[in-house]
Length: 160
Ligand SMILES: [Ca+2]
Image 1 (cartoon, rainbow, N blue to C red):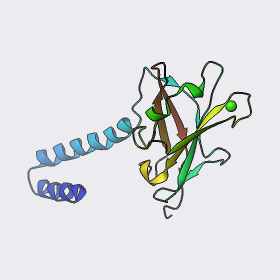
Image 2 (cartoon, helix red, strand yellow; image 1 turned 45 degrees about the horizontal axis):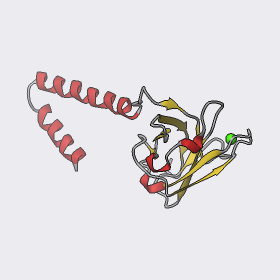
Image 3 (cartoon, protein in one colour; image 1 turned 90 degrees about the vertical axis):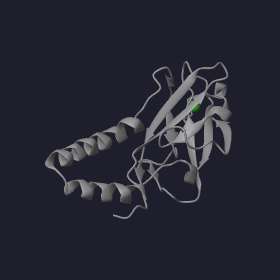
Image 4 (spheres, rainbow, N blue to C red; image 1 turned 180 degrees about the horizontal axis):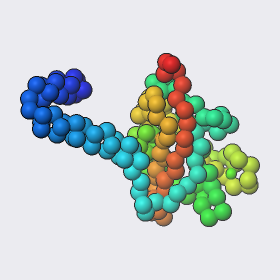
């Protein structure tokens, strides 16, 4: 709907003066530029944590729109205990604000002797779309520290 209106507006401008046409292109390029910036927005105060979408799936592929559950592991590290993250605070998806975990469990996924947090999300709530290459997990520890992790993937089932 919005895209249709935008296209109609643009064609109307094309029939007007060259200055207006240039302005449209300029604004259009600003909008195009702004979208990846918004997606890559970071919380500079957050502790960066290591996450993995579908651990064991290398390279990671995600099928947007498919009904199903997407597992995401939040790894503990030498100075970070994933068990201290308040599961209720966790959000995961295209920008890190989308899906809440439907359930979580604790397991040492990478066998480094530290227990990691496995979070399960409904795929359809993640906002991940065809062509996306990165997703963000955000949360907060019981101590009030913000955490943020990013993982890359390729989308599948999106046509050619
Ligand atoms: Ca571990």
